[in-house]
Length: 103
Image (cartoon, rainbow, N blue to C red; front, side, top):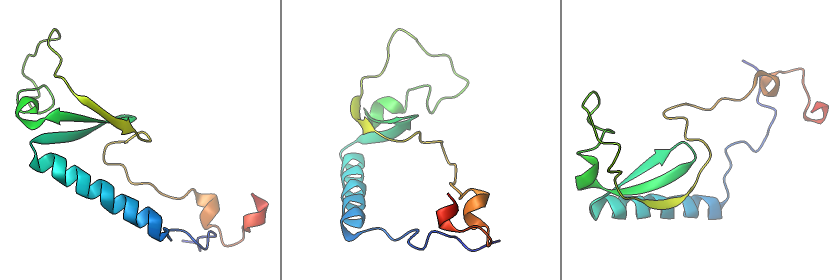
């Protein structure tokens, strides 16, 4: 594997770290209050946990009604969640011979 050409990769600012911690704490508070936070492609949605337990989300293979959607709150847009994908650098960013100015 080559050397990553971006010298500052992974160096988040103090503000970015603080904001991330705040989001994490708010999600914990929502969960403690009886809510489930679910990533749906490009958005976060908040449901009541007691209702999600009777949904098609956790009861795969069981029939469910298309007439009664579970109410939810929109919690903002995100980049496509991609489920449990892990993000990797493209190969050109790892090439020892490539210099940043070549991009």
